[in-house]
Image 1 (cartoon, rainbow, N blue to C red):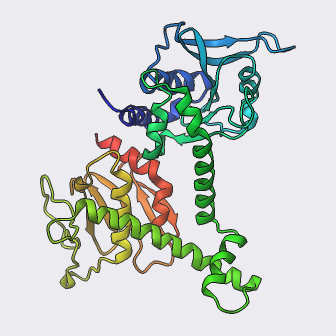
Image 2 (tube, rainbow, N blue to C red):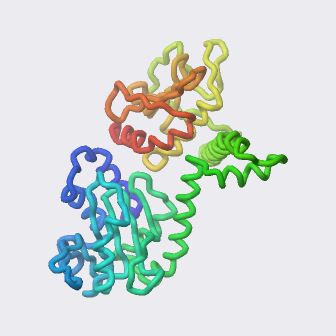
Length: 366
């Protein structure tokens, strides 16, 4: 039996390939949400004893109002699901019906989703009143593996309400803190910058100094993340002497004279593979690890660009990095065909902003 993560990835793959055609709320429900309820959570969407679509429970003066799905166990409503279309970012204002229904049904779990992002709520703050902050937030296109066991707890096979509710408060605060950290890394606030500045700068941290250190703090975190990614890949992919090498070709085509095909630079061809390019290579392998064996991802460094390939095959480019000696750095991705699309980047850390494109490219070669 496939794992919860495998089933989530199957829906994610479907979303990547069909996202352009999923434009309405009904299409979102049919293509993404119902498969999630059925395949990931394991409930029979065609059995009204388990899943009731368009569930109605009159609330005060609100008559005939519907919730998209009510999920039942042993005849009692356990989970309420409200859906929005895939293109609509989720907002707590979208959860008004969930708030109302939560207090008049036996449900202790509520899910707000647009088919890609899922926000899961309970009543940890006040009994029978849905919290305004979700305790679990995940994106199926960038699934956090640490959250997979929590998603599995919602399934028919493993549903344990006490365990879910008892873990909810901790998950809520951890999730909020992680999102704050992500925001600070992307766009450091004055308080964040000042925190680090005062620990390394001996003089008064004036606003001018804070502005100067803002760039340094952002660079420090970018380099730290790159180091962590590199260390993990070195551990996972190292050979006996501890070095990481490019993946061998499955069917090695003749390499152009302007291209090198190994980690060490060939000083005779005028090509110098930089640490930044290798960091980019390791980041791409880390991103793609959920979809393909990292050993199948290799690189070729040329005078114009640094190419990252599947199977060391020039006909299967994943991304090209244009970094060395450039005032404006950019990448070319190939999710929409062989000609590629250009995206400017500040550093190789920005590759994490293109996870969907890289994974979609791999799906195209499957």
